[in-house]
Length: 502
Image 1 (cartoon, rainbow, N blue to C red):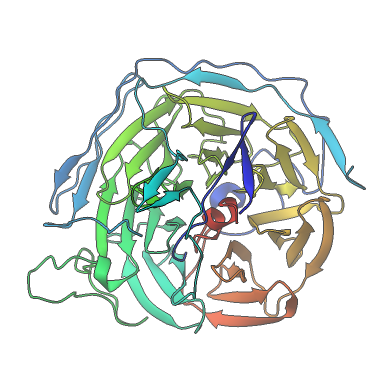
Image 2: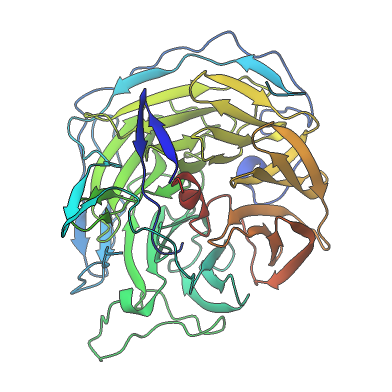
């Protein structure tokens, strides 16, 4: 078992159980929305302007419904309650369950501001007892054999998400994420791999699906679970009984404001059960008045538990673009070629830390590695990282293109490149380029994720994906997945697995 730092303290952390666009147009481009030509760089700014988040803002709760949805408007002082549609008689999921050759730039100073009054602190690691044995986080938490592992690949043109078995390479099911025209893009998979949240940009909604039949709900009471059985069996919207909940977010606008960045949290450590319980979901969307809204959702029920509004959001007019979790279970969100934030859920009340990167570091794809440091895939610009302790930025030499998705494993950072079309492999510790790998064919390399068995998955926008052994990249396997894929987020749960120390 490895240890992780929490401030100046060191805590033992448990091993997880179970499994786990340039201008956002959906097409590659070599010029960003601010008119910056690919490869150009400028000197970093000398500082940032502090912005205070108002205190005492309203915390929202959803209105529970069965079939109906509302699309209200928010104001700058309060938030209209989103509408959550849940499966009737749902019981909720069973939660038993000296660097060489790099360039560094002094980082900007963060501003931490209080936003809401009450919260539940996540990631608690205390000690309890089980029988006559002392129960500490990590005890008895071995992975064991991996029986099922899935990658969830959304199709923006089909308003659905494909569930692909990462071992057999078979698409075993496909689900509608909305009634149509939804443009699903970002995904997040729970730590145990049993649940996925899919964000729909165009309609401003989020849908949660269960991966396993035992977690689905018999809504019509016919004694069986009516759900997709294969890639061609796509049930009508709201008819698939593995859809657990669906939220309509209250914003006025369309494509640019819809929810994007999203991540699960493991939940809290139960000292009696010796496991994590009550996992949460954090995501971000925009609202009128220049506010970004970061919300915490109960993963089982879809209940909105906290809403954290952040004014003067800097993200080129788009909602928070990418989301990921750090080893202290704090969500991070990147803005499109703008700022990035950390939601400090370890503080009560919750605070938000904000940073704006130097102009040449273009945040597009976004992830957080096992050390708790964010990485940015710039479009256009270099691949870069931010040291959360020293607040310094480091750009990887030899990387300068339109980069899209990005993910990190124990040893490497993997980046989807569109200029040229390739898969970049970066040494995570030395922050140096290891190789630029070709795929054949390669149209528009988009999404990246690491599965439960540590295989890297690269999703191409034009209807296929690649399963890649990090020790044998040239031997990658192609998997056909119909649809136009525009995804930059965790499709397998691998990002969460990477921050839980072994």
